[in-house]
Amino acid sequence: MSLILCIETGTDICSVGLARNGELVSLRESDEGRDHAKKVAVFVDELLRETGVSPDELDAVAVGMGPGSYTGLRIGVSFAKGMCYALGIPLVAVGSLDALAEVAVEDHEAGIVDVENWEQARLCPMVDARRMEVYTRLYDSAGNPLTEVSAEVVTVDSFAEWRRTAPLVIFGNGAAKCREVMPDAVYINVVPSARGLARLAQQRLTEGRTEDIAYFEPFYLKDFIVIPSKKKLL
Image (cartoon, rainbow, N blue to C red; front, side):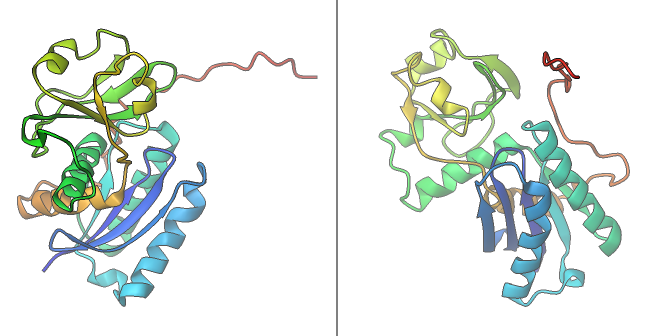
């Protein structure tokens, strides 16, 4: 039996879950802005108290590795690495887009999401990358990846070939950018959550696909760029 603490902080949502054998046991989430540094430890403490699980009973910590918010990813990964160091347990990294696609698949399985011709659909999770750019990857309806992770500028021609051949299901916090330029796509309300890590993290742990805690870094996809302020300082 594996107990895995799951952490997803790559967007405005701070999400922490506890999973047993790939099934979610408990979840804490907040979408009240980017104060993840304050909330992630509180959420972990609440989950462990609620479930009666001691930290030393955990078998691994799983974290959404990105792409996503630079600051959010740093917070989640740093906290996960700290717990792994302290407890002497493995770190499991799950792609944030993979986890987001998994949430959509689980919501469909649970009847929460209803999309016509789901079996033929192409899932397109999107994480906001500012302006008209998104981080994305395409998946089949079972959550298997069809393309590599990429940063895409959203235009009327985006994913044109995929849209012609099957329903393109778009979701995530970057989806709003697409509604006007891609009205023929299908839009569903699915957002990043630690619950999307549960099954994927268990698979990776079972297969021995863990990370080197000392050297692991989030997957930013793009370099972090500091833009100087235009305001004049007195």
